[in-house]
Image 1: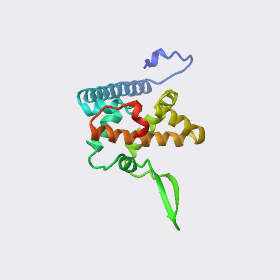
Image 2: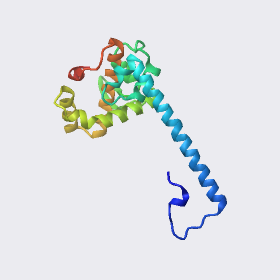
Image 3: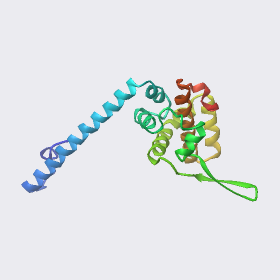
Image 4: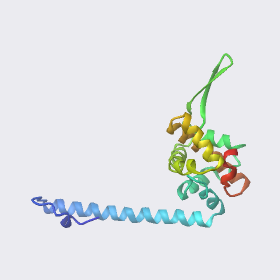
Length: 184
């Protein structure tokens, strides 16, 4: 951040009290930036040291912050019988309404852990162009989905798939294999 004196706005008069307050706010922002950097460094260190976090960080769309948050909330994934249960717990699966034997799929349920759901959706949104451009099974699946559905729907579907992949990586203690991603 530049000092107030360096801005160089002609004709702007600021009282000495206002100048002191603005400088105080600037120093507070710099201190917060330093604290945030320290937390980011701590997350990166945790992710480097923990084998599960390293495996999760290798999944596209799941970075250091998502990996540590998922490990804190899910652990080894043993609370879930299958990957769809984790995706459902995060609120990434469609709600169902059935009557008279007909099942109607509605929007995502949005139940469960809001923070993790939001983080996975943001990660999926960031990874979507990269994954769709690859000549893998997941890339073909994403291109097919993009051809027939809105991008936001595809992003949520990818987030649900990432949740299933996260579960598989945690339960089987194996690293992510991009070639087997579409089968997860």
